Each structure stands twice: as structure tokens, then as C-alpha cells.
Length: 316
Image 1 (tube, rainbow, N blue to C red):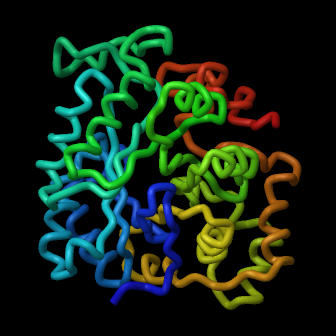
Image 2: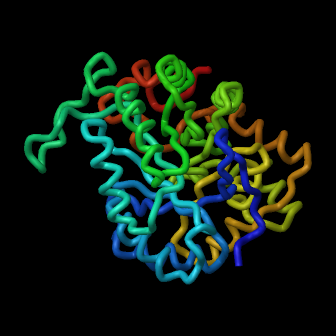
């Protein structure tokens, strides 16, 4: 049975479950564990699975869906475009690996890409926006995928408001989703408002900061959790969902899966307290390892449109 989570309507009318199970297992994760993790997630009530070709596990996500016994139309599948040189081919590769008939949400994973590979072991130079293909070129090709009938909605990940403006100046289709890092240390309120003004749903990955949830020790967060008799993680997921920001909650442990999808209704005061955590000294920052040195996958914070200083401290 599906859990009692909200559904959010995207700008094209598609209904997206309000909490997703993340399928990234980390750099050293065993991708073969994905199938069991996804089967367990579906058993405890998740109906949204989020993966990507770069995670190396689309095949196992698809196997779990096919073997779950749950009708395909009840499961929402998100995957992503990793490079821009062959959008149709990349999409077809994901479609074949998943083997579940269609993809619900297809996202540009990052706004930057590498030059076309000449050798499998060489990732190639990272292209600037002024080189081609860039994310505008990729988006035009993604828009053409809608005519296949094999994808229900399109979106982006890790886009700043500035990059959304650049994209929208050329787009025929407004992205349905912008998936970004979001948690109490990086609540993304300004970006959420910018997205909402354009009809784009902000979605939160790494709501628990990928194993570095320093905010779990915050006294206000613990107080809110104590009042509701839940874990800090449950408060974070509930806070995001209540803001209208669907979180992607990743855990391989069945009990944590179950609690993470058991939402509570937070009071206005609860929401205010969690909203304010990032305003405390030293708390307003990214918490992900790959965002800490001023360059993220070959682009600087300035190129990414992120208002951040070195060390991941957000300046806005």
C-alpha cells in the first residue's frame, strides 16, 4: 500500500508523489544492492524512485519495479540526462536499461557537460556555456522527446535562477522540475520563489546532506522532533513536503525508509524554527563534498550562478 504522502501537480498536469526514494548509493556503493533497496522502498509505500545513468543502477531499478507486483502507472520514475552530445540516444539507453515502458520525469542532471568522449576511460574536458552543445542545445533535443510518448515530463537539476532565465529565453517547454540540494542548512527559499514564479516545481535532493546532516544536532530541530515524537529526519522531510518541495529521501535501511515516509503536520512555529536554522552562525552552507572547493564538476560557482564563497558558504 502506498504511504500517505502528498502528490504535487507539475506544470503540465502530471501528478508527482511528494516523497521519492533516492537510488544513488554513493561512489563506493554496490549497485547490485539497488534492486533490494527499491523493492523494500516500494513495499513500505514509496511510489517515486529517483535514479540516473551515472548511478550505474537503472537496470536494477527497473527490475525492482517489474518484480514488485505494483501496477506500472502507480510508480513514478525519474532519471536523468548525463551528457548533451546524443540526447535521443542517451534517453533510449535509459529507457532500455529501465525497461518499464516509459519514463515519468527526465532531467538534465547538471548544466555543464564534457566534450564528446573519444576513449571510454577519458571523461574529456568540461565545456563552457559558450561552447556547444550547451544546456540550451540539450533542452531543445529533450523537448523533441515528448513526441515519442515515452516521457511524461521534463526538467533540470542544479540550475540557478540565472540559468533558468537563460534556458527559458529559448525554451518551447517550461521545465516542470528543478532538482537541487536543499535541507535546513540550505533551504533554497529564494530559488524556490524564482522557480514558482515560472511555474517550476523545486525538488530537494540530499535532504539529509548525504551523511553529513549537521543540522540534526540543532536544538530547535530536536525540539520540534521531540514535540511530535519523531526523528529529526522525519521533521526535515515533513518540512520540505509542507513547503511544496518534494524531497528525495535515500536510505537502504527498511526501518528508516518507513519513518522517512511517515510525515507529520508541522505548526507555523515548527516551520519557522526549521526555516531559521540556516540563519545561525556558520549554518548557511552547502554540505556536499563536491561543492566545497569553488569548482563543481569543472565550473566555478560564478559559472553555475551560485552565490557561494569558498568552503561552500552561501553569501546571499
